[in-house]
View 1 (cartoon, one colour):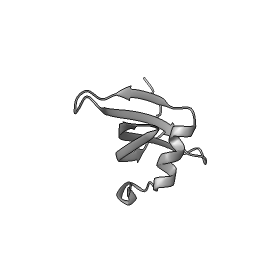
View 2: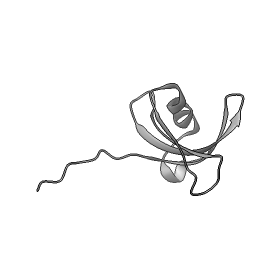
View 3: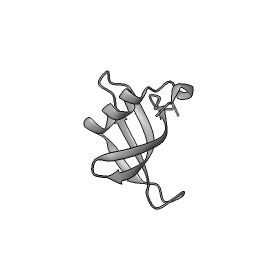
View 4: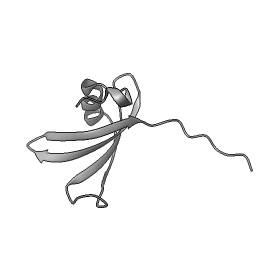
Length: 74
């Protein structure tokens, strides 16, 4: 994965699969496309869009950093 446009290196994306993560299917596009929200070794939170190729392999299409959410004052 070459995600320099989004500031993500391949190694960072791979690290997200080895830490706690949230996973969901993304049926809006294709049946085999998935979304993963995970963390890198340094604690950076990323969202990855990928295809599960089986046998522990994933094809990552894109990814971006998740920003911290702030609560709105009412």
